[in-house]
Image (cartoon, rainbow over all chains, first blue to last red; front, top):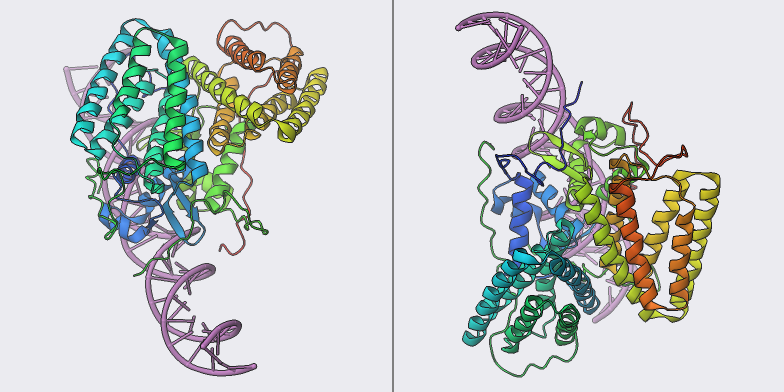
Length: 266
Length: 266
DNA sequence: CATCGTATGTTTGTCGACAATACGATGATC
DNA sequence: GATCATCGTATTGTCGACAAACATACGATG
């Protein structure tokens, strides 16, 4: 009857001043949730897709129990919506949602930038290097007209920016926001055409960060988000026939690879 | 085999321009998650408490299945922590967590204030009225030395502030942050003594909002959060024997009231 | 006396099955 | 011909049960 004390259950994975890093074994629920997130990002599960439990469970190689638990994680994130007795589905972003996502991103990335500037020193320098690498990827992708790679680098850039700030909550919120960003581009059929100047935008941000020009940096973040919302919801200036970033046509809702369960799971 | 189309599954509950408000039938998982959140806020489940599934399920009058699903929601929020094969527990906030929570709150409330100022008009006026009411509650509670009521009014103030901004994502994030705020006061034994000047702090915020003094408003928010972190993590200036806001002693981890299931559930 | 190994009990993780409900199709009626 | 009612089917929501694993307590051994 005496329950285990669960010593320092909260900060266990977080701060590890010990010599040995704690073994990180992801639970099945973790794997399921992450797999679904990935499928959404990849466009394998387009916005609005209904998610049948039986089918998904079979594809993932688990039973409905753990699957449902994992999906509740995404419901809490807002990536899945649920209607009683009708099942769950991938959220689809309205124009208002898109504006809300980028508004939130502006707040989060602004906070991250402030923290980064306050950190300064080698941490800031390392971040600048990492961001520069992502900008280069973007340039290459833009030259090749590869929308998918361009979009991926874009997300990676902003994720790195926020993760470098060293705030658990900022990072966690940002992860969800980036997936919602993808859902936004999928939901608005006005597409995210391959814009060569996107790399320039990000390069300016890196430069402002490097020289620690706070006012300029925050202004760039703000306008970056404003521009994205306008492009997605307002009149999109598309007219070129470049490849665009859209969810693959969901003829077949695309199968999820079965996940290899952690060792020991039956 | 043809799956229902789930028309506008995403924005259904969100924007309701129709005459009839959609019937809000909360799922069992919703009720369970909300019940646990409430128990955490009330201090019935103090930080670090291990949560036995069988016992909780019995108290709530549900089986372990829906209970586990509901708890996964809170895991995603960060309110519950999980260790494989050892179960879940209420998160406990380290000093770093407390700082992170208030840092995040500063970002969120700043964004909310900006939106509010941009809204202006009757919406802003109504918010000011509501906030004023909360400030009065705080004054009364402070006079009586009622820490619990003071704390509740404090949370209500900030929740109203953010909810009035009309951003789904800000509101959702804020809800979690407020619970984490409570967990912070519970985790730091340096207590949240009844401070009479707390009402003054908030009154100044309302005033700045009323006269639309943006710079002053943002400065007040910032210093409000800084002060809270210093009080909680730094040397707490406690020496008075006023009632403090602490989790009730968990001799018996306090029972959860069974929840009345939505009509039709067996 | 301390430490290691073993046994036991309790709890989590997972699965399969049942019941209730919502949807779609079919048929009847005005 | 269109609308409404009825039936059948598929899927969700919920429950109970089994097996693996961890933690504790006890005993053996150096």
